[in-house]
Length: 141
Image 1 (cartoon, rainbow, N blue to C red):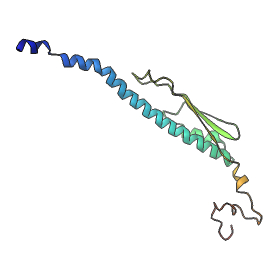
Image 2: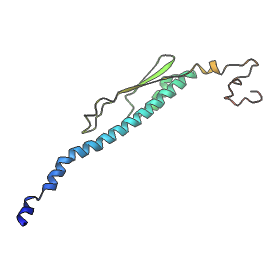
Image 3: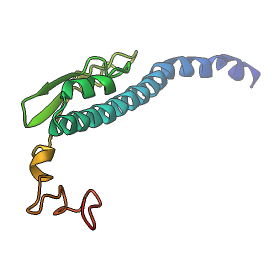
Image 4: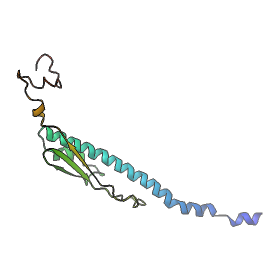
């Protein structure tokens, strides 16, 4: 019996060494996908902020640049065409053991409504935004 037990010494070490690349791959994949999800959150919000800035007559590039200055979102680019803002995010998994994930690039396009002056224009009696009630104009502005 003792001879059989000695023949298997080191078996668990070999099995661990065979499984380590798989375990590292799973851990790094979870980290990479977490970074990607954070990047999608920030780029989506940046596209919204850029569209909102464009809607109120500001430069959408300034708004998106301010929000996309983090390490994960530095490569993002913004384009605005007057009616919508598009944020393009190139994403290639670059952590070790994550090359199987591939390309996760995406574009986010947000279209805002008309200029703020267009829908909050002066009503018939000269009060601004009374018709929509979004500026608490109860009793006159």
